Image (cartoon, rainbow, N blue to C red; front, top):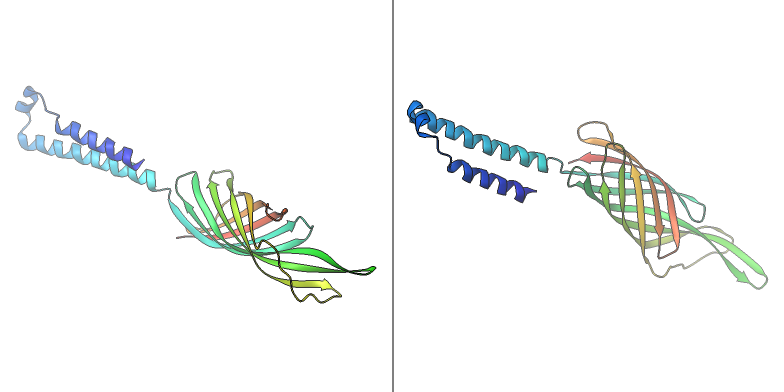
Length: 219
């Protein structure tokens, strides 16, 4: 868009430089006035070019903040999450979104000892990194893209047996997230954005679905 505006400005400038007033009009208008008129014409073109540039790039904005989530996992458990978000609006309707999010996933397991089964539950801890395309509209915003989840630890939540070691393989997982959200303006720089989110984790064959709310600050 910027290249196109520059070319338009260049061509208009060239065109104006070749404009010559007809002879009768030259005799009626003093040269000083003609030069001022010519200067005003050039100034108007420059002003037009600058205005178009502001319209083209005025939609750009950067936001950062925190996001709180409440999601249900494919195991049927409700888990809370917390993250830092960053967002770059590039055009009126398009932008990119990312961040780092902490969340857990509870999994139920058992150990067989002869005829007995000892059940226990483990809460896995993950850091999620989404890389999303975001579409903006007055009605609703839409985000979609891949997520990269990193296993960072675990904690035993229940069971009579004591679990001394636990790991998952692979410790890195690939997923996909879809979000629908609505931005609420609190001020010129502060915004709230509630969202509905669906995030299947393809590597582990599991999923999260739930709600989130982002508090964002416009830089």
